[in-house]
Each structure stands twice: as C-alpha cells, then as structure tokens.
Length: 299
Image 1 (spheres, rainbow, N blue to C red):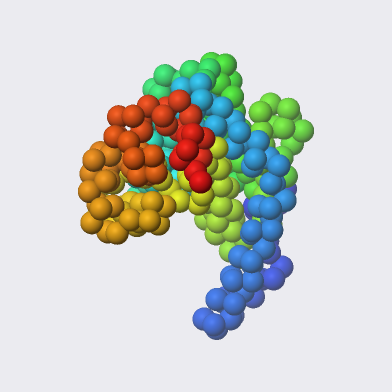
Image 2: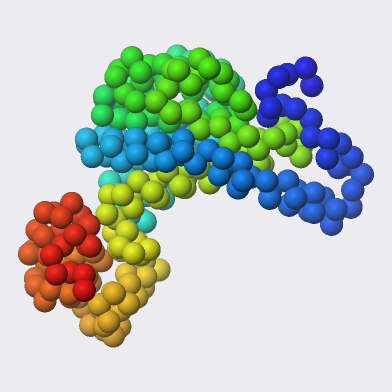
C-alpha cells in the first residue's frame, strides 16, 4: 500500500475476505481479534507507567485528558464518561477531547483532525495546567490534531503520553513521558483501525483508569465501593455490596446507604465500626479514602 505505517499494511490472511462465506468471515475476524490481548500485554510496563501518571495527576488536583480523532477520540470520550457513575468522580477529572467536537461522536468529521492548531486550541479551552496528564490517541501515530494538542500541552508544562498501534519513532519516545504501542498488526480490512486497533485502545484505556481508581482507594477488594447511586441498577449494586461486606439483609443495607448519602464506602465504615456518617467520612478522609486503611474497619 506504499505506506510504512503498520496500520496501513495489507493483512495477508484476509486478502480473499471478499470471497468468504459469512461463517468464514466471522472466523477470520475472531482469529485476528485473539491476537489483540497479547499485543496489549506486551505493553504492560508502559501501561502501568501511564496509570501512575494518571494517579499522580489526580493527587495533584489535575486531570487525565484524552485527545483523539475518529474512533480514537470516541473511545477516549467513552472512557471519560464512564468514570463518574462508576467511581463517583467529578466529571472534570477525566476528560475526553475529540477532533470536531461532540458532534463527531455520532457523525464522522474526518477533516477535523488535519489542523494541529485546533488541537492546541482545545487545550487552551480546557485551561490546561502543569498538574494535568494528557494522553494522545492516534493509532496511526500521525494525526495532526493530536500532535498539536500534545505539543501545546508540553509547552504548558503538563505531562504527556501517546498511544498508537504502529512502531513509535525514537523521537516520539524521547518527546513524551510514556508511549504505549500495542502492535496488533494489519487490520482484516486494510486501514480500518476501528477494528483491532480500536479494541486494543479500549483495553488500554480501561486498564489505565481502572488501575488509577484502584490506587486511589475507590475499590475495596474488587468491589466498586465509590460508585455513585444515580439509578436503580446502581442502587441495587450498592445495596448488594453492603449486604456482602457488612453481612446485612436488604432492608438494613438500603437504610444504611440512605444514611450515608448514597455513598457505599461511607456506609461500609459505618456498619463495621458502628458509627455515624460524619465520623465515617472523617476517618476515610484521614485514610486517603481507602477502607482497608481505616483503623478497625478490616477484620
């Protein structure tokens, strides 16, 4: 294809995909998808570094800001949007920026990614600060919008990272605090990076934010104890977490959760120490938000 980017290479295993039956197409795509997790696993050290950078940004009162275009931008916005209901975070804590604005989430605006100045302007719009960590997502590694945003972020003193699915240059590695490059190989449909590259991106972003939230004490055991009770599903989950961790029946769990203002983590400390919500919140504050570090809360 006269392009040295891995994401633009032709996949020899799918050269005859247009002649396959539906069942054969499914099998081929599934076989290719099986390689994605292994490629992400090869980048474990870099992903862990990005997780630490996100945690450190939060600890300084900064933000994790994703910047991307097309599928990459949509996945960043998706990951950011899932943080408040899952981990009770402020919506400004994890932010997704997509070239072309929010309208590009539902209708492709491919030309929006071509001007690096637009990326820089988005960083100004967010009033970027040195405490922030900006992660650019461009599976091909070349998106001007993303590079413009990251260049401006570095000028503003923020830490930066880059996520791509083609071998990174030495210059790219030297420029950013972390570079994550899961090499998933050529796509089944040449250049269609919404497929394997998109799946790899989703896995990486999920891991970074989940790990950062665990490090911040928003998970107890493997339970999302900092969830925000905003709907029936989350109300039910919060009650079941209390029933499990505090060995309560449904009605006492519901009442305790109400006394805790819908905050599961506070309710757990209340139940285990037999104290009021205000005191439980104070103890959690002193322990850095970690239930396990509240004296007497763990047997």
